[in-house]
Structures are given as C-alpha cells and as structure tokens.
Length: 361
Image (cartoon, rainbow, N blue to C red):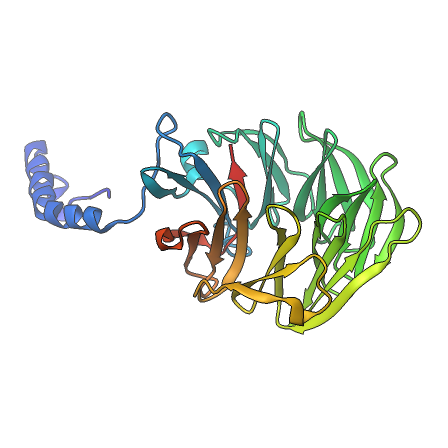
C-alpha cells in the first residue's frame, strides 16, 4: 500500500517526512502482520519456484464489458495445494481482457479464447508468458486442435476461424449458420455444436460441412465416449436434454435421447470413457454410456456450492474441480475434490465467475 502524507506535511523538510512514514509504518505493522497471518492464498509462486505435480489453470470470465477476466493457477504436490492468483497479469504486466471463455494446451502452447475482446492468445504453458495473439476475431468461444490448425468457434461471426498455430493468423473461415460452441473429433469428422439445434459434421480436409444432425435447441456440449458414441448436451431457458448418436458410415443413428428440467453443464468422461459426468442443479451426476433415460443417472457429488458454474475432471490425478460463481459479481471460489481422499478437499479464492479449467504441464 502506497501512503501519502497529509497536505500539511508535504512542504516540511525531508527528515520530517521520513519520520512521519516511519511512525505510520510502526503504527500499521501489527495489523499488517495479522492480515498476513490470516491470508489463505499464496500469490505466486515465483516462476523459478516449485510448480507442483498437478497444475490446473482456472479461467475466470469476469463480467461482460468490465474487462476483469483473470487467470489463476492451482498447484498441488506432496506439500499441499495452493493458488496463484492473477497469474497472467503477474507475468505479462497487463490485463488478460474481457470474458475469458476457454482454453486448450497443445504442443508448447496454452491457447486462450477471450470472447468479448475478440482475441485468441498463445502462452508458454509453464511460464504463462504471452507469445502470440490474434486480435481480429469477432467473439471466439471454444478451441480445438485439428492437425496443426487451431479451430475457433464463435458466438456472432457465423463462421469457424481456422488459425495457423505458428503465428495465430487466420488461414481459413468456415461459414456456419449462427452461434457455434464445443467441437470434438468424431471418426472422420469434426463435430460442431450449433446452438440453434444442430450438430455440424465438418470434413477436416476440405473444411466443408458434409452432414447435419438435428438435436434440441441450445446445443452446447459434445463428448465422444469409449464406444465412439457422440453425446450432445442441450440447455436453454431451464430445459435440457441429452442425445447420443452412434458413429456410422452412412447413417448416424440416434441411440438415446431424454429431456430434463434445469440447466445442463458440460459433459466429461471417466478414465475408461464408459461413464460420463454432467453437472445440473448445482450437483454432479454420472451415467453409463448405455444410459437410456434420466432414471439411469445418479448423483455423484454434491459440492455444496452457491452456484456451480463449471467443473473439470482431472483423469490423471482422479480429482474434480468445481467452480462457484456465487452472485456472478463477487470473486468466486474453486473446490478441489480428490476422489481418492475426499477429506483432503480444499477451497480456493479466485477471480470473478470461474468457469473453465485447463490442465497445465
């Protein structure tokens, strides 16, 4: 904290200013020490310090038009778990932008999509130093590596941008009819969730949409299970659905479909890909890949959070991370929940609206 002497002291000799600062320092020192002892966050660690065996980046959206997005990093090793708040700002000496949407580690890059800033950034995934950027995009959402290219879905642009990962320049734009979200590789295709109620099947070689699968409105989430079934999660206005399609050469048969009340979060896979996880109603549910209805779902974890805004399953560590957006304006928290030892769960303060997680090397 930088202190300025009262106006009446500004013209006094320098020695009196020094004494004034010295007395003020002695006055506030006990309080500062008390505050430090109560702090449960670690601001750091320094870049040359221990990085932890398990490092997960927490992407905090911030608020639309506020420019208060943050990137925090949670690290865990045998000594415990700690969080590095404002990691991007600490390393790059600048804010990250407006609405930090999603991220992806590929090769020697941590790619970040910053939605309302219209940009995609590339960072060194260890030091978090920014190395490249593309600031010409409309409203980037989700990211997928397709060969050596980075594909970027978009909210308003009516296109998918294809970027050259060596310099992040746009090399191709794939025209689509509206808002696109999650993308996954499915057989020979790139499957793209189109919010209006479709899954677009794009040939990655020609970059042409060859097939379209009809689903419910609000298509947001995609995942491919161990049986090569494509699961589609749709969520809009408090109504949600899950649909599964079998991979085929000619027809892509719908093998499961059911509707539910309440919004639906992302779909993620278990270690063997035979069980799937989905968040809804502030809880985490699981279901087998052969599930046929909501009756086949079971609650796995109730994290006890105010507003479950996102989650992540770390397959290697067998750990869940749950993001609590609270009131969507205050700083959020993340609950780290180790499945092998739930008694070691821990809460960590983050930026505003934590929503997305990326495992770091």
